[in-house]
Length: 376
Image 1 (cartoon, rainbow, N blue to C red):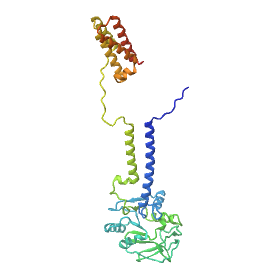
Image 2: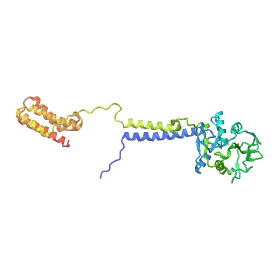
Image 3: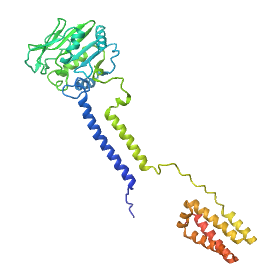
Image 4: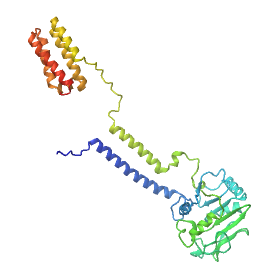
């Protein structure tokens, strides 16, 4: 038993190598782009993976079935719900944005301001900011006032802000100590404002400390049944971006590599890069019975040279039809070449006796039958 060796032709091996190379290039490009993208996302965004980002809070709520949404258009705010504004911002609030948000809260909306950088929003929109409190830094702070935010929460982590003192009697210090206030709330029209002066409890670095995770959930759910939105419009993620830009740098890189792979495949597997060459028209060869009858007529008329020429023509047509060309046919079928050479030599000599004619014609017929039968 002869074993067949597994062989890969050179073109297939080249295509496989190119596919592997493109895959490696994509992984390198995607890793590089992801690292650049993660570093470029503002730290106050719910997409930021940095220690002070809010992605852990967003993902934790999603795992609990809260379905937080990203707000990418600030021209009109949702009918109801809670809006999280994380700082620092990539784009400052315009006067129109501040007016729109103020009216929305007065109508019953709820805003959560995250970070001490939100002092300008708190002062310009909601009537009060904060002054820096004691420089002492505590690792945690306990509830200081009854609120839906403190149920089951014993303490939340603090950062290095040292605490702040809220300005304005409307603000209620919910989490505070002698160093200052970390979380404050106030009513504003029919809505509510919650200000995390210290963002640590909801950041990626702090949400796992103390009771921060429980506090983060209560913070999201205290607004009732309305949806929770993270303001990403002021972090650069807008609905005005095109579908191409929404793919992100990694997605665009993947599409470019895909097109490159398709082009390589087309050039590697394509048989031609120019226009198609028309196939030569090969007239249908006459049948054996027809050739035999024609040869008999020529023999009766004494036109032996013409009869041989006709038989040569029939054999040549069969060779072209099977092997694709005159040269290929003569090279592949030695018996036909010998018969054609003998017949051509007789016709050039001028006189052909009967025996020579019969022998040569028989050679031509035998060669044709062999080619037509597929044995040549």
